[in-house]
Length: 476
Image (cartoon, rainbow, N blue to C red; front, top):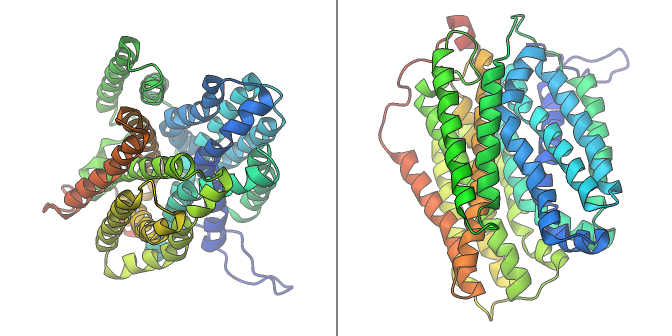
């Protein structure tokens, strides 16, 4: 790894390769892509009026981005191993930035959807490179804190989307939900070439093209079925698509099993580590819980309490603010007392806060009555997300970091899609709109309780060592 922390002749710190400068750059790019998953939801009514679009068209503004992002994460992780993580991160950032400008300039729903698809491609290219670069850049003693900060970005971005989106839409208009990415993307691109080192393993890599096609088709079909199932009333076509996607996924895994000695897209050695396996599963559950909590809460504030988009966003602000404050300390605490303890505290805090919010979400409620529960949810998010990535990557050797990042992010993304689909289905299933909101809010509580149970189950932390030479393992 390359690290430079000295001073230039002029007395300015040399930040190229400095781990914390690298982390800041990667986290800013990561935050930008995750924020775009939730920030646009609050702009849907304004987009419909401005572009004279139907709800189905505008919903694809959201779905197109999510679909491409979920389907291509595993492939882009392998491309990062082949071409260099910094190169893929830069390409993804450039694509995302250009597509953001195109979204803001869109004159019709078709051009907006197309630009969002390209945005999703850019996000898919850059996202898995972030974790891999952090693992390669930071020494083991500080990797927990770094991955904790990186992981907390996911929670803050998910929770702050409605707040920031409401403020932007109500002040400068929906187009600036996209235009705001342009200066940020350009800054990330400049800092990437200035601060992020081009770390290569020196090994030649080959891409498993049939595996890419199988995984892409399986993830695309499954994501589409989960996102669109409620809209199509879970008709036979949706169930057939889901079944075909699962069959393709099975074929993909069988192919991977035959290619474990020939650079598979998913090295099964990763799952020999119980810590990686459990934490990756928890990523999916927590991703579903976060989205499953934000959607019904936002709907309650707007539909039941009559708040505007901007006021609803402000009412939800305590959660991301507390999470932002807590996350860095949670990462350090994870290094000192163990990430699992911090993670368990976070799961319980978020579940308690959401349970209180559910009980207080009554027709006569005031938005301020939710402040304390939202603060507990923010505390839980900060404690959950920060150690999650640290514990997942603790025993992963650098040569498998790219593949591990692809798997982690894919599971988290699919969890978010599943959480959104389940929340929509439960809200529609309620006898009344408020009953549906309560059903949707109860689901994340159940998921978090199951996650806490999985975390405390007895078992060997490491079933078998992850294959790798001794020097490489020591460097982790």
